[in-house]
Amino acid sequence: MNDWEMTAPDGRTLETYLRDYNLMLEQIASGTPPTQEELSAAPLITHWKIEEVIYTSGERYRHIFGNFEGHPFIVEGGFGRTSPLLQLDRGMTWARCRSRVYRLQEPYPQWKAG
Image 1 (tube, rainbow, N blue to C red):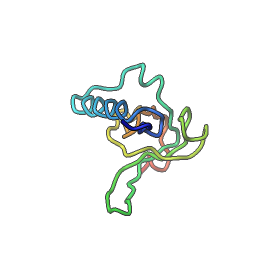
Image 2 (image 1 turned 90 degrees about the vertical axis):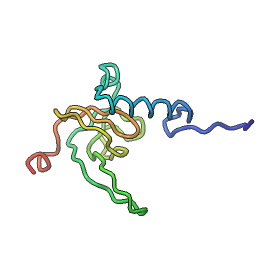
Image 3 (image 1 turned 180 degrees about the horizontal axis):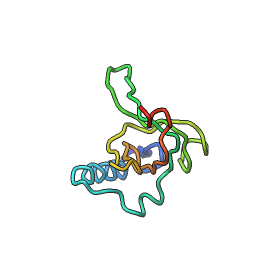
Image 4 (image 1 turned 45 degrees about the horizontal axis):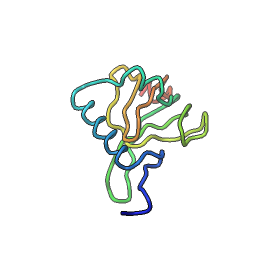
């Protein structure tokens, strides 16, 4: 047995992270929206837009860029991006990304107009 344990960036054990990720994929497949509890605890993104990022591996993923509030790793009000986008609510009030659920406020004005 190892004297170390693999953890996700947010401190969850790898086992817990994979369990949570599989649950999220099941929710997406079944069309189940986040619970009110999940949304209440979710970070908020303001002045956001969705952009495609091309990685050096050639893989392409869409991310949400914007100003974050309540995120564990991004300074309060700071600009950042999410992990890859997996699901966007039709009303654009929440999004599921690879690492977590986010609440969305008003998109970036130029992106909304485009």
